[in-house]
Image (cartoon, rainbow, N blue to C red):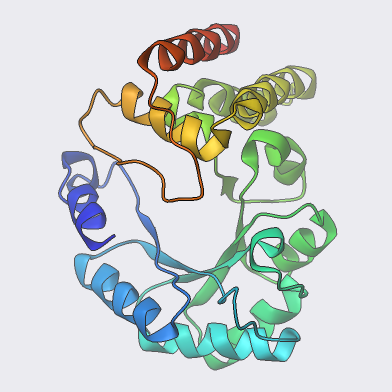
Amino acid sequence: RKAMLEMWMSTEEVRAKKLRVLAHVSCLAPPETVELARHAAALGVDAVSYMVPCFFKPVGDAAVAKMLADFALAVPTTPVLFYHFPDMTGVACSMERVLVAAREAAPNVVGAKFTHNDLADMQASIRAGFDVLIGSGDELLLPSLVLGTAGGFSVPGMMGGNLAILGIFEAYERGDLAAAAEYQDTARQMLGLLKRHPAGFVGAGKALAERAMGGAAPLGPPRPPISALSDAAELERLAAEMGRLIEKAR
């Protein structure tokens, strides 16, 4: 993980400030998380993202907020985003209450990556003064923009699907919600294509992303139990299907 971050931080786009870097540093062991965060801070990342441990879990908003604040205090000059992904961590909490409490102890807690469907909690966090990025931008970017999100993440965006995400932003900014909804539906279909694949959206997505980058950034195979998409002919078939959706977004 350190080597991959160092590779990205050395790119011309990052050095020229054309690309901002948010480093996800979380591990099951908090000391390892802090080690990765300090490494990222030393490299000059724009922010780090923190997810609570998902084996031995904190219980309740106060416990989650304390873990977040303790982490943020380990990198006090680096902005920290709370990575709220309850379906993955199994930790249910009010993101708004967690962020507010953590910010009282650690002012560098500035926002969150929100991978959940409770948009009311997301909006409450935005109204409390936090920058929130929607994690499931391929499905929820448009409604999240209406509620004030600062942006979002896209899986197909790593393989040409950024045209659909850009279309959502541009149509929303000019007030054309009908066009924005069409782009959102195309992004949803792109993610659905990956989700339906036997390798899953991680295995299939990794293979397509590496193909799109032409080998410039070898991503390596996914870790078990996630399957890898290693069949070259199947990869080309999937790329062609994704390409048809990308053309739809042009």
